[in-house]
Amino acid sequence: MGQLMRAALSCFCGRGITAVAVVAVAVVMVALAPAPLRAEQQVPASQEQLKLSFAPVVRQVAPAVVNIYTKRVVQQQPGLSPLFSDPLFKRFFGENFGFFGMPRERIQNSLGSGVIVSGDGLIVTNYHVIRGATEIRVVLADRRELEAELVLEDERTDLSVLRIDPQGKPLPFLSFRDSDAIEVGDLVLAIGNPFGVGQTVTSGIVSALARTQAGISDYAFFIQTDAAINPGNSGGALVTLDGKLLGINTAIYSRSGGSIGIGFAIPANMVRTVVTSALHGGRVMRPWPGLVGQSLTADLAEGFGLERPGGVVVSKVYPGGPAAAAGLRRGDAIVAVDEQPVDDLQAFRFRIATRELGTTVNLDVRRDHQPLTLQLEMSRAPETPPRAATKLDGRHPLAGATAANLSPALAEELDMEGAWDGVVIVDVARGSPAYRLGFRPGDIMVAVNQVDCETVQTLKTELERPAEHWSITFSRDGRARTVEISS
Image (cartoon, rainbow, N blue to C red; front, side, top):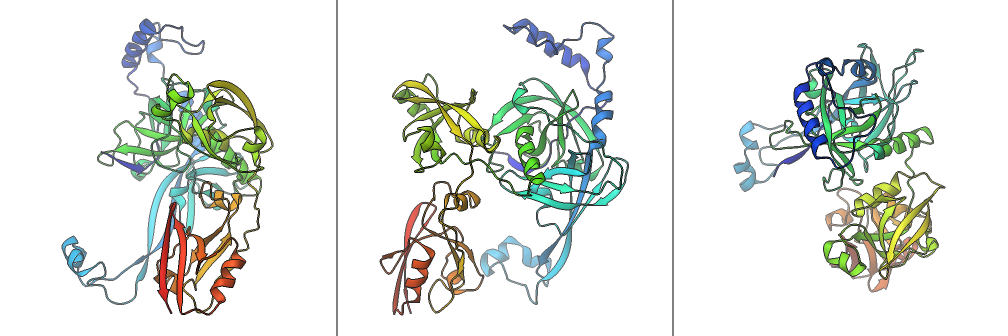
């Protein structure tokens, strides 16, 4: 199997597109298609039309695509010899064999691409392009080099928003295209900075939509294209022939590290949501449906009276939440959101995440083999009870850990779907008793010495009781574990 690499698709073909191949494919499609092409889609009908070029569109959009250079400080252990890095030595003597002295810092440089989305200097790029950066610099198409300020970073969508000072000059920018209106086969162009060689334009078509199995980010719902992209293109623009931003190029599927014609872009509708959040407080606030679900497989489809697999089966509903208010029940099958089909759980999460807070969406639902439509309000996850994050100190096994009360809001923040109550460890200091005993962020504390811990205060009270033996039960990745410790 190939390896998914963080790279941004760079597509927009230069002047030398092989138009004859495009014509041949288009003619075959016309011959086989049962329905006529859209009005704006036309097959070249003369020799003159074969000389058409993408150059006018490239001239329009290329100035809005920038190069991004970052610096980050990384720790490097000094070694006596490169020989000690050999896997054979590490296998027998351990990872730290041959290392002496304190770790030393070094500066690591990396590059990527970005897209200007407003004339006052707002830029969107990938989160992985600027992750951990201590310095971010942006190089414009006119070769000006400017320092960038980080406005928002959202690891769950792999998007970040930067701002630069345009120095009184309005900047060229790209408007968003409705990514739900695109179709497989539409021509697209991508622009980026592959391998740091400078701005490069490639062309291709939309190969597939709603790719949810790429495993690149939490909100996996990608546009796939065959445009040639390579490392360094991350954060670049995928644009339509009307000069609008269709997506942010994010990754490729590759066997060697180079492009093999399978690239992925984050749809513009998701990008627009993150950019809007950057303009209103700098924090992404997503709608919360108040339910837990699973993808509706072929085995389940027959039981719901569906002709094919696809949809989300509701397995848990939060009492008093949006789903409960809409009338959703455990066992309902959600097959569409605002008439947009949802093939699996990732598609459902994407549809909800791209809606605005305060609005309402229509859900097409199957219940007892009968179709019905329910209205789901787009509201925020409540932080009830308050998290009350508390550092646990003292002479007990959890010393050095920080615990908080779980709520729907905190569960969303930690990406712990359905963990709506209880106490969770949110931080563990390295070297502390809790760290040495193996406790980690995300562990849900269940009981201490057979006493249920429903709140941080209960947990703290039980830990402060003198004891010669500790029995701590916690849940990790849905599995309960018990640790027995003697004082």
